[in-house]
Image (cartoon, rainbow, N blue to C red; front, side):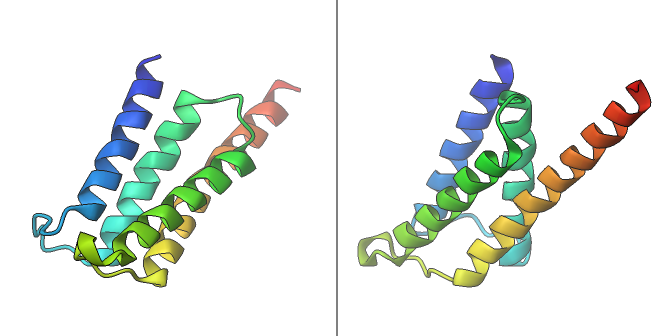
Length: 112
């Protein structure tokens, strides 16, 4: 239950920070910010929903990243949308889920 609350809270925070007109400047490359956010979201997503197939978690996170970019493209949001941000989101989430899948595979092989 705790991981689910953390996951959905992180999603809400990521979305909110993505659509506020003047986000705090953390002096970190934009793509790295996206990657870090989606690394955390993917890890929390796996912990919150361990029985969910990783491909569906990835699809959900990809759709979430696309929704952020669409929201940022709306004129009243006063932000810039960049498809490469979505690529950074996707690659970060994919990397976490690949590591999880490999870890699970190794653990299953050790048991047998």
